[in-house]
Every structure is written in C-alpha cells, then in structure tokens.
Length: 100
Image (cartoon, rainbow, N blue to C red):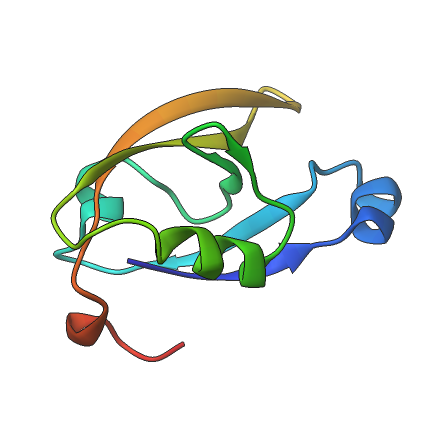
C-alpha cells in the first residue's frame, strides 16, 4: 500500500536518516493507510527482518499472504529526531494497488 525509495547507507550518513525504505506515498484504502503509516516514515523492519532497500521490502513481502497482518517498524521524524514505531499492517492484494 506504499510507494517508496531506498535510503542507502550513503544517504543515511549524508542526511542523518535511518537505512530502510522512505515512504513517499501511502495509498488510500490500503492496510498501510489504515495501520497508520505516513508519508516520510522509513520502513526499517518487517516482523523481525531488517529492511535496507525497496528490493528487500518487496522480497520480504512475498512470504506473506494478502490479508495477513504483519508488524512493521518505521522510523518517524518527530521533534527533530527519528523515533521507532511499530505498526500493525493488514497486507493488501498487490493487484489492487497502483503501480509505483
């Protein structure tokens, strides 16, 4: 339910951001939106698996079924710093999502 870009180690060091996937879009009517994910969040874990790129995120999601709930750790920028939050996301059917 998101569109995002990888935050590489180089970008992390340059901009002081966590490594992961920065959320650019959260699509309406998806589990990501309903679970509280926001544009600007950085996905750092799916379950217990660390996520370092959009490719890793897509690969990890192949292990889950549509409709399944999964804990997603995001780093959210609040009061000048990134704070980890754990969201429970109900996964959407990939065919119902916009191409990003």
